[in-house]
Length: 104
Image: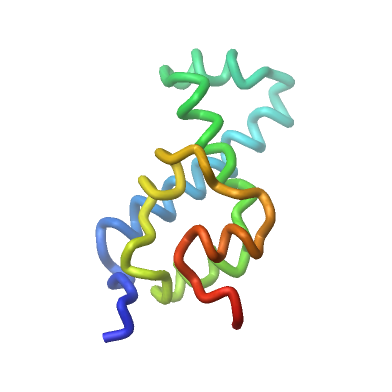
């Protein structure tokens, strides 16, 4: 009724997996002393895609909490956060971009 996607939906699972993957990439970049280009080659993906997923490691924790609780906007999915390449780095801007009200 509130426009949120179902918690057990495929879109939410994919979104959470993408966020987790971004964190994994970030950890690997730090621990393996590798570059984004090298990691993309190892993972068999383009540098552009890896970079867009990597940005999810810096997603506002409040947004992640909302997704886990199933309170994200129905229009929010991993495609919106990774395909556009436009994910803002400032958390308040991320909330607006993701479709959350800027007031909590």
